[in-house]
Length: 227
Image (tube, rainbow, N blue to C red):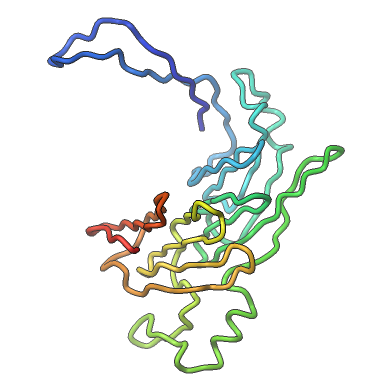
């Protein structure tokens, strides 16, 4: 993981470009080394940088400590939360962190800051919530086929939750999964508002929300636009 700065370069460019403009160049000013796990996601929120990794950990580090002379010995002192599945994606909303996991779940964490102690993350919900699952499991109309011999309620992801995105106002969270579904969640009460089944013909790996509320999802086939 690297912390980058930008600077303009005025060196002459040798090449075939007719309209030359000084490029923006980047160089690494700090490298933070942890264990051998893969960092699969990054998110910024307030004073912190959050990382999610393949070893099921979420780590939070203060931005003002990420300098060229970062103290590697202090890395283990930063808050670490261990989940139940590889962390695939992170989004931040106010004092909450939403994390997507390989165990088909989305977890919601509260950021607890205390000037006298290290800040920490506290688990406040796992999506879909117990009440959401219970409410939908009782009615047959809420069950959908997820494979030839398996049914599940529409609020569930039935494979890795691969990516998350948040609406501009922070009220809605969008999740996509390798099960080809797009789910929409209320960011305040964590209720599943809608599920788009078979949104792609293959696993969905990415989702992003535009400023006007359009949602784009991408997989190994052509992306779709949902208004």
